[in-house]
Amino acid sequence: MFVFTKMTQIPVKINNKNPRLASYILSQYGGPDGELGASLRYLSQRFAQTEKSGIALLTDIGTEELGHLEMIGSIVTQLTKGEGAKSFDRYGVGDYYIDHANAVYPASASGVPFSAAYMQSKADPIADIMEDMAAEQKARATYDNILRMCDDPDVTNVIRYLREREVVHFQRFGELLDILQSKIK
Amino acid sequence: MASNMNMSVQQLMRRVSEALFYVTDLNLYLDTHPDDTKALRMFAEASANAKACVEAFESRYYPLYATSADCSDSWEWLVGTWPSQKMQ
Image (cartoon, rainbow over all chains, first blue to last red; front, side):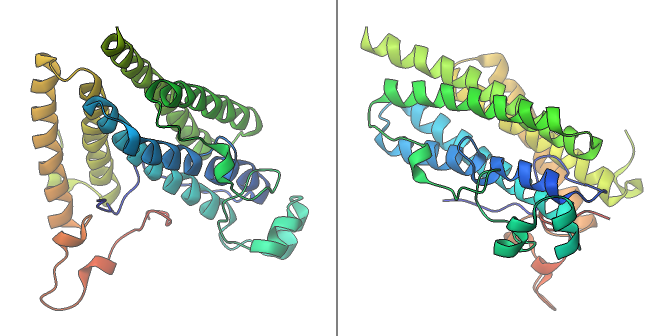
């Protein structure tokens, strides 16, 4: 089960408004390499894991990714709080405003709604962990793209932190792959 | 180290988030290194420290876990900054 903690992993405090930046960052909420896909991927794959370290790692990283999903939602909310239709339009994201106004909706930066087709769950530990390692790199690359677009230090601080966590997760999944492969031999 | 009583809500929250982050990171490491005795010792220390930091925060400011909410008068769980909000 899960226990909610009323805080984010690091504080999210964004002072400036920028609906366009919010729409880019939203991709890490419900986009192809976002935190929703990451958490669902790991939390689903763990049911087929038999190795204890595999069950634990997928559960624990999947849980951390849910916390990251919340942080992304918080950034998007704070970047758009109080901004109206005209502001969204000026920032070039009037189309998002028409469908969702100031809400957080799981979609990619290009507006495609979240899909479970972004992830797999194969009951094959090697196939699953290989996918997870690739997923961490794709998420890291997406955070790199966001950092290239973003010059608000309140936002880049949090994005750099989340990017770094993907690198750590990649490392841990690599160690798990070694453990699984050593059991096969 | 500044005493808890002199710390603002933001300072004390930062201390909680650092302490819990250390626990999370060691937790992931131990999942793939369950016999690393040095890491096990570090986890025990980090875990005790995080518990103390959470208790200090909750007794001074507001509940981080629903089970910590005071319900003698009204539902204290509603109090405080939620993750979607900006801490003032």
